[in-house]
Length: 227
Image (cartoon, rainbow, N blue to C red; front, side, top):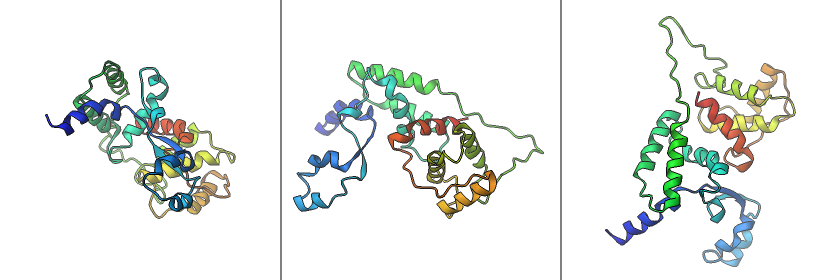
């Protein structure tokens, strides 16, 4: 076995069981000292949020219960967004099975994650009657039947005029997953919401659905889209 393969085998479990953590550039300036000059470091946007993996992002048997949902969500994001949840889970189980897990703690984590994946309720395929036509609502905004996902989140988040942050997430996660047409802008969406729901938002803003602030929202989105 080559040195490269031995290194991969030794670190595979460690590399797999990690999550990304969002942090400001200012918090990791020391990491740039060996690759950037002092002047280049000064020019960095210290408030820019970046995704990193560090010692705090390692999954262990002790923090598994706390981090398992975040870990699952981030693992699902590594697959093509056009895959169904069932397809993603099948591929994930295959990847997990091929992983050369060696250490005892990681064997336990592997078993826990396999159980977690197999316990997710399968995404049911709805079979229409021959004469049944599924109505595509608001298809000037949403692609296919994606309005159903939007409406489910709208109800789940109990959207009111004060819930703009939830609406920001709803719009951006659906745009990211190609469920809203590319040409629909933040302003277009605000106008549409006012017209359909009679709720006026001054504006809708960009939000990164992968940030820690959106973790719970992302879990709800995954639950809705997995049904």
